[in-house]
Length: 343
Image (tube, rainbow, N blue to C red):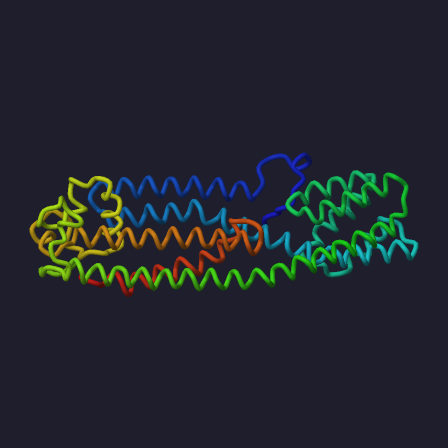
């Protein structure tokens, strides 16, 4: 199990979290290299899929780990005020700090219990209370709420103040802050719903745009599209045919044309976009437009998910759960609706 809250100075070596991230990146790079080699042999669809698999392998574990870490911090912040309240009650009852933490171990504080166990064990080993709290604070660097609360407790202890009253006050402040955060999250949920609605509308608009372009430009048919004399708008100003975007004269479109072949946006038997058959059915233009709209959907989905993660949990990496919803939804709609058009 991954321990997100380590004491780096007392636990030398690479953490499991770092091992997983580095290992996934290395494995992803190896898979992408293999995919590139297969792609270079002419097996474009298989090679492209392997490259995409390698990219997912390299990136996805980091996103999942970041999401799990953010969730663990959120759970601990939720239980922290109750823990401080019980700790203050134990101190008021005449218990020592060691006995108070020993008593706290019997209560279920969720993810926070693991940290309470560490504190109790360190106190039982004879480590001074200020040092134990400092180490606890360093482990909680991912949570400013808990870290600041521990800092106040530590300063009160060092100054000789009434630690019980300080713990109660800190607990009340943490509880109030948690309530404010919950109200903020409730309000932000409305923004998340709006973001989802906007993205799904964007998917619908993308489908409509391609349908309109296919009708106007005659993509996938040997007949001329509705838009006559299109060369005046997209060509060289003469009544000529549209440039073949997947031809050698437009090199910047090559990656998009490869995407079209990888995902089957054009018939599988079309391997040369400059052939007479491909020119007759405008498969070069079809591949270009389908790919550029598909790429727009994926980029928009990733950006929307990152913003949703930032809004909901304060970290773009927390948007992995939103990406798991947005990206597959866009992919499925595009593959079922847009991909078959003209094939």
